[in-house]
Image (cartoon, rainbow, N blue to C red; front, side, top):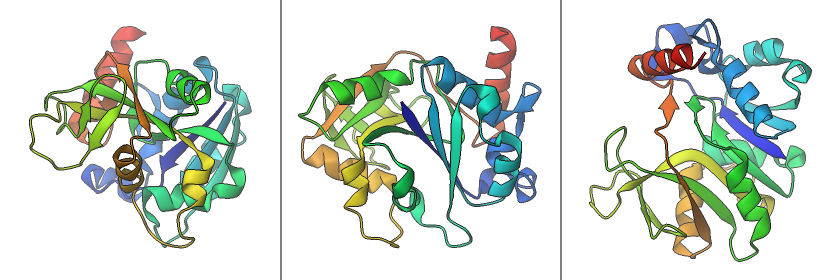
Amino acid sequence: MQAVILAGGLATRMRPHTLTTPKSMLPVAGRPFVDWQLEKLAACGYDDVVMCIAHLGEQIEAHVGDGARFGLRVRYSSEGPNLMGTAGAIRLALPLLAPTFLVTYGDSYLPFDYAAPLRELDAHDDCDGVMSVFKNEGKWDPSNVQTDGAWVLAYEKGTKDPAFDHIDYGAVAIRKPILAALPEGKAVGFDVVQREIAEKKRLRAHLAHDRFFEIGSPEGLATLERHLTKAS
């Protein structure tokens, strides 16, 4: 099973730390965050990881290497200085992608079975993607998903409509042709791709039941550190 990690962002909310250290390498509970993330993916059955890197990505590559010590094969796709957006970054990695794969973010730590969305995608040919969603009701971050529990009925970042009471949990299984259809060299966000699939009624929902964690803000990093320290 293959996972793609989007780890190329500038992480402006974590400055000044991320001026010299990529977000994936920020220390959490005594270790670089990426270590926690890769170990979790391996524990869920993944064996192949593609890391989409850009800002200070050479530090991630130097630390993670080929991934063997995590029980993984890790390869890299670098955007360089010209950021292509989250979907554009995946499109750039096209030669490395499996027919179906999971997309997650380089600042997300999710206490669930990362393999579940990909298993569901591989089991159903009536969809192009499976989005993990959580009934957030605006609590942890603004909610952006309307779902009937089986399908993503609508996906809209920034909406204030109370019908959107779930949130994109941060792990989406998707088919390679969806990314291959994007124009080469054009910057585009992965949220745009997900919204279009939902509009076509081709995006299934996988319900997660525990809150998500992220290190995109100092508060988020501190919360995850408490969670991991307590768990260990």
